[in-house]
Image (cartoon, rainbow over all chains, first blue to last red; front, side, top):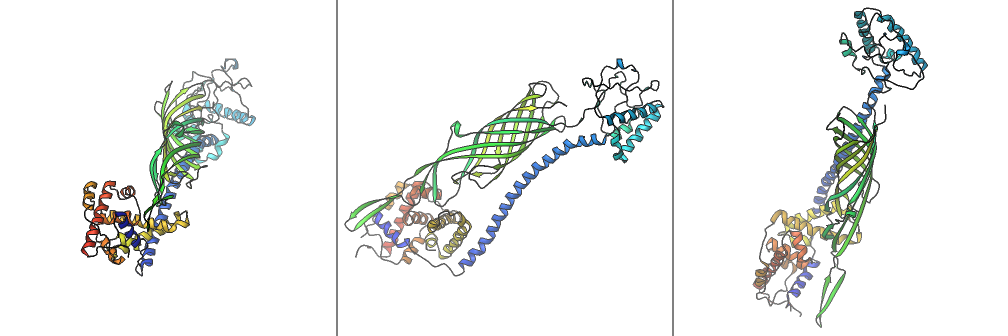
Length: 431
Length: 154
């Protein structure tokens, strides 16, 4: 006779433990008809994820191509030798001794071409200024209509200034193999032929007679940087839903050694405008996390046996919660593209800027199957000139993983976000 | 299906629950790492489905003080269970209020602790205990009404 609550429950359990009931006949069809669309939905979700990753990759690629285009653009202009607004040298200083500096010509062909053009220029200089302006315009028009014929003309020499005096013949500057001294640049080249053609007279000071030499690449020169960023990582933890494991007491480690990581970056930067630059680099990043949790499997690991009476035995399953510790280290190799906005351009001393961009990282360690990880990063930086070419950069910033990633136990989905301090060097090679 | 009938209020609800549970099983079966424990896992999925079903369709909370409920359940229940068929017993369980039925099934039949039940159903541990006590009390009363007072060793 059932006299205790436990006995009463045990009898109920016995009745229902193996109770079976037949489902309706069309149950399988009904289930299968619902399974297919759901799996298709999962597939579409997977495609959405792929699309998202693809868009991030495409964005980075677009930034790379844009920077490449910006880099090559002035080179192309150089190759085509677009006309510039640099005036012909004044002819007042005919004495080579009075020429304040000299420049070096290394290419004999270029030397010959320049001599030829100087002769042509000398002929034109003798003509009235209106005629010279008209010639300038013709030259510009010729550049526009048939740029392929321009490469023969050295840069800066194919437009004759209307300001040049007609009273003085042109003398060629002395060419020596002395130490290069480019001297002060008289005027910046202007890559706007239409604008130049539209201007009737470009007044350029004729007081400076120093011969000038254009730099090989007057456009965007890349600068290079390298940096290291110690990271302190936080994360959003989401326990994976598992039907067999109940996780309790989830405690992420708070010790410094369990949360630190680092990020090393090296690359190049292009100044696209006075205030905006694009930097592209390769990144190595390492993050780690450590946490403990207790879990109790539904299956008992031992049993407690009690004799109720000579005919009855009470068996109580015992469960023991065990504490687990999980340590996961993720290592990424990534490519990074960032925009950099100068907050105080042109000012001497400390330079302030904001940088933001993204990285596409490939997981090179860890057991996660999510190998590609898009990462967003942003920072506020201060830059200080150390030498003429080297600047020190210090940037407090944040690095945020856009996709969550599973840890070693596969029990948790982790989305790390790290705060850190970028310390780097910026090297601007001389032109 | 037997498990679903225990947790459901009616045959129709049990079938719907069964379909939903198996759909979930088919969707998640690739996550099973230990094939030997497949049946166990399936049972767990079905129980979770039943709990979700309860949250979705019933969710009538019975916040009863544990001590009070214990007093209620401690009333006269010397003869508790009857020699009735399992189908009849099942009808009694199905007639229980939703919250009582859930807790009773989870604790008495499927062997979950009150702590686990509280976590799964989003109620306090005390509520789980009180609902169990009330469920047992209701079942005992119904068994008495059926006129069967003894279920023992013969």
